[in-house]
Amino acid sequence: MSTDAARYDDQGEVPLGGYAVLASVFAAGTGAFALLARRRGVRLPQHVPPWDVALLGTAAYKASRLLAKDKVTSFVRAPFTRRTGEGEGNEVIEEPRGSGLRRATGDLLSCPFCTAAWATGALMCSYTASPRLTRLVCGGLGALTVADWLQYAWTWTQRTAAD
Image (tube, rainbow, N blue to C red):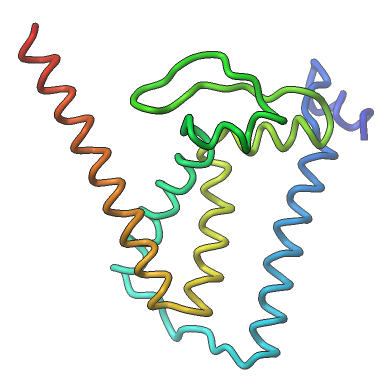
């Protein structure tokens, strides 16, 4: 795949093979869940109400920020990333390291937009199997998101008042 990567990226640093492995894992996990759910007679919801979409989206946002940026979850990312700075609040700035699958995993784990897709997939599977429990978990993550926004608002008001 290195020839294809060279044609895709002038520097040849894009780990296309690693991305393919990660995409395959995601697809296989989703497919395995679907098969298992069907085998166990889990019925898909007829529709997902807009409120649940907002709740799931807020929870996926927060879960992805926790996984990709939080200091406390650095141990998960450490084998695949290198810390390059401090972000706002309790967040860190990291960059992927290594090559191949290690680099692709670092790209995934250091990008909240990327991890949001995986968090959303997990939450949707959970919502299908246990909507009440998933709403509870999402409500907690949503409350944490609101708390974060309030912390940032408080910090902003303090900085503004000091200026």
